[in-house]
Image (tube, rainbow, N blue to C red; front, side):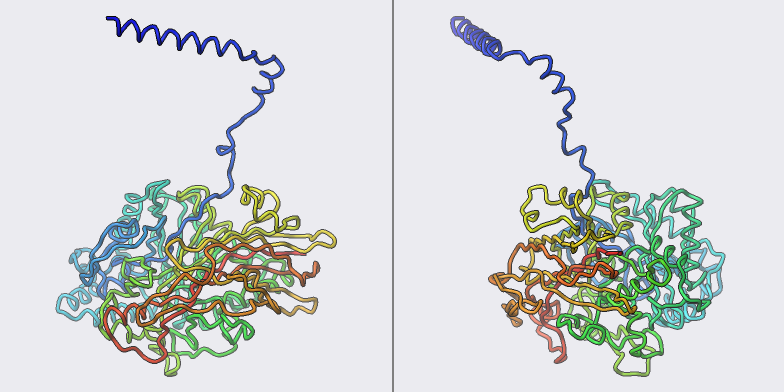
Length: 634
C-alpha cells in the first residue's frame, strides 16, 4: 500500500513538473502562428525526381519461344519470374542454381512467331494437332526427332508463312504469359513488365524488336502479338503499336537490338520496303515508338568497333565482325548502319537535313538468354541456350551461334566468343510498371555489360565542380540541368556545357578504372566527328592528351579466376566542360565507364571444369557501362 502511494506521488510530481516546464515556454505570437501555418515542412512527398536506380532485364526467353522450347528449355514464364526474383531453381538440364542478387524488374519477351509451340507439343494440345503441319511437327518430337521438327519451324520463318494461321494457340499462350506477369508483379518490390519479341529477319538480317507494355493484362490481352509473319517492316509494327494505343488508351514502346547482325539495315538511310529516303515523319515516329536501343548483349557488343572508331583503344569489346545471320558477309559499307555510336553521329546529320533525328535513342543492355535464367554473373553463367548450361561439354563453347548460312568462314562465331550478357539500369522514382516505362520513354537509362555499377549524369550551362559535393546533388542537377537522355539548346554566350558525373562501383564487383565522355558532332560542312575524353582516372592518374596518362593495371589471376580491388577506385566523380565546344554545331555526349580488369566466364569455366579452350578465348576483360546521351541543338 505504501509502495503504491509512493508511485502515485512520483507520478504526480512528474506531471506537475512537466506542466510547470511547459508554462515556462512563451506562447507563440499570432504572427509566428500564421507563419507556421504557411510553412509546409514535408520535403520528400514533394519530390518527384528519380531517386533510385533499378537493375533488370528486358529480353528474356522461356520455353514459350520456339527457338528455346524446341531445343531443351522446359522452364516457362512463371519459372522465369521466380528465378528473377531470386528463388532457387533447377535448370532445364538439371543444374541447381540461384541468382547472386534478385532483379528489380524483368520482361519475359518470348518470340511472337508461333508463341507457345513447344509447350503445346509437350501437352499434345488438341488445337495444335488439329492442324496437319502441327500434327506432323508434334509427331516428329514425340518420335525423338526434335531437331527435324525445329527445322520445320525455321523453314516457315524463312518463307514468312504462318503454318498455324487462324489457330487460337497464339492467343492462348499470350494470355498465359500475361497472366504470369500479373501474378508476379508486386508494385514497389518487383516489376513484371508485359512484353514480347517481334522477330523480323528479312533475308536473314536481324531487325528484331522487343515490345514493352506500360499496361496490365486487361489491355494487353486485347491484342494477339504482331509477328514477322504479319510483316517484317518496322513501319507496319509501328502501325500495330499505334492502333493498340488508340484502341486501349494504353502505351507500348519497342526496343531494337543487334544492329551488328542487321546486314546494314538497322540504321539505314532509306525505309525498308519502299526504299524512300527517311523524312521527318519517319524520324519522329521512330523515336516516339523506339526511344531506346539495346546496345550490348550476349550476341556481341554494339557500341562501336575499331573499323569505325580507330582512335578508341577500348572499341574492340566482344565485337562479332564480320557477322551475319544471313548468307551475306558484312561489308565495310554496312558497318555505319549497324553500330550505335555511328548511328548517333549520323542522326545529327539527319536532323540538320530533315528537321528530326531518327537515331536519337537512349541505351540499355540485355542478356537475350533462351534458358529462362537471367544470369549475367561471370562466375555463374548459364549460357544462351539450355544445351550450353554450365558443364565441361564442348557444346558449351563450340556451338555455332553466328554465320550458319554464310559461306565465309570468318563469319563463324562460336559460343566461347560470346559475352555473359548485359543489364538495363533505369533511374526512376519507384519500382512500378508505370515509373519504369516512363523512364525508358524519356531515355533516363543506361546499359551495362552485366555489372551493377551506378552512373548518374547531368549536363547544363551553370553546373560546376563544386556541385559534385552537394548533399542535394540530384535535386540540383534536375533544377539546373538535364539528366541522361535530355536536351540542351541555345548555348548562352561564351558558355560551354558542363557534365557532372558520379559513379559508384558494383557493391559486389570490381573497382573503377576511368570515366570517359564520348562526344559526337556535326561540322558546318555536314561531316560528323567523334572524340573521346577521359574525364577522370582512378588511383590519382592524371590526364594527358585527353587520356589517362597510364593504364590502371591488372590484378587478374586467370588460373584462379580471381582479381583484387587493390587498384582502381570504388567511387569516382567528374565535372567536365567541353574544351572544344562550338555553339553552332549539333552534338551529343554520352558517358562510358570502365571497370578494372576482371576474369570472364571462360576463366571460371577453365577453373571449375579443367578444360582447354582455343587460344583466342577471352579470359579477362573490362566490364563497362554506356549511358544515354545528352544532346545539344544550336
